[in-house]
Length: 85
Image (cartoon, rainbow, N blue to C red):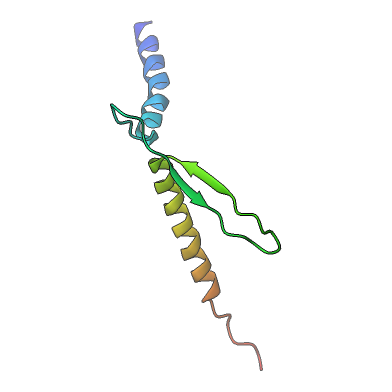
């Protein structure tokens, strides 16, 4: 019976341990200063949008945009196979 309780406790603790690893690092003391960015205008929209995030979120956002740019480069430089003519 104790063995089942032990297994249940381990199973419930595992997801929280994974989430703790992915959580942003927290600094003690003063609160973190937000990073603010402005979006560029697209098409006929003349309004620029300003948004703020923590440094940790900005780092994740930068990594995602870098991956997106790499993906676009790969698809733009792809040359299709030569046709029958």
